Image (cartoon, rainbow over all chains, first blue to last red; front, top):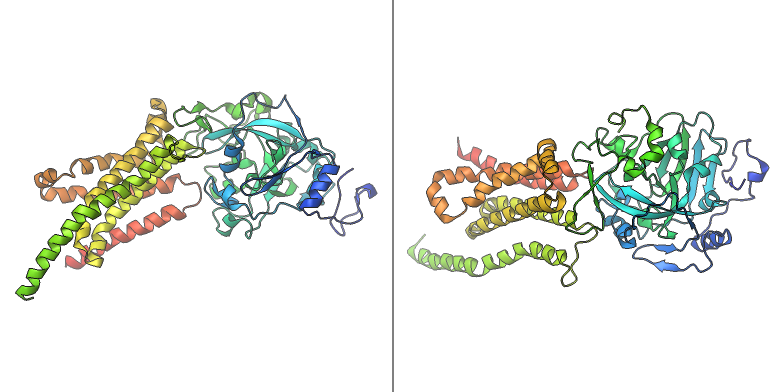
Length: 322
Length: 214
């Protein structure tokens, strides 16, 4: 068991092997050294001074089974055009306003219906898992899409180590709340902190990825550093960023966009060309990078992952559970 | 007022009109054209201009925003003239109104050709089924007769009815703000600002009308 438990005075069901002498918080340099020692980062790592945040190269293997053949979008497009309302509502606000965000050290609280709970340093959550690259489609609820080479680990493999109990029917996630570093949080556009959730079978699905990188490098701040969710068959807003809490729950957890506009954004938010957003069609999408004069392309059921995930929703009315 | 001041004023007013005609209007024309030129250079990536990651969205948003801004500025001319006793401002109103129509039309055409790719099933469905698009489309349609009747000849021909017809711009601006409000996802600050300004400009007219009528 590689999970370190750092919560003081925690309950008695921890194995002695889980206990490490003291809680160690890493600064950036130590984090890099630790990650290098753990084999996560190649020896030839270099710090890339991107516009706003520092990223480092990761060591990973490509998962061909779960990767599209489509050419990925440019790194520049992926890192300068996205929604991360914590840094502002414009598409270029995340890259412009995330320079002051500091994603290290990082701890994640694991709580709720599981045998192993507590606060864990990021590197302890990642330890023992091999990083995979997966080229996924990302379909935004606003009807644009990209192809993104993420680097991460299957969420299910991580969750299993916390030994969820039979009561764990859902998994809830929470984004960090730091208005001093995240200017978008100073105005209640959404109810902060951002929260998201998955049904446990969705969370355990092999496609569901806990991403730590993109294009072979650690996530830049604007894309959800240091840890984010990627659920390729759901609309992008389900991919919660900068995660600080994972909670196993018995009841369906609240989710931010559903709280903001319940008739427009459901808990499931599966990509579905036949169920329109009340204000716009979801039948087609604009592929980012296709230029000024190319037509929109048809949106695929479950964003093209129908074969893999349709079983999860057998018998459900997807117009009702949107 | 004695004869001397009247005599002094007349050439002053004429001179001011001349300045507006020769300098202010051409300068305003160029200023109003700048956002369009910016987008044009960006579309063809001339002189380092770019439209960014989602060029269609960039064009649509920029044209729509300038259309709405110029509608609001056009509405502001009469109140500003009264508040600052600047009669010459009225000479700028037609150009501002026509530029508003120009940008709203570009916004519509960008949607039609670049966003929808002239894919009629989606266009018809959007106009019929999406209230925010219906409203925007309606606002653009209503602007057409105003643009067509903006000439001096049409003003003379329509006489008193011209003013009544052109009061439609009050409704059009409100439709434009509503169209904007309805398409934002969560942050209503900017459409709320447009609504606030529009309500002040329309409210001032209503208040003036009430003071005059009894």
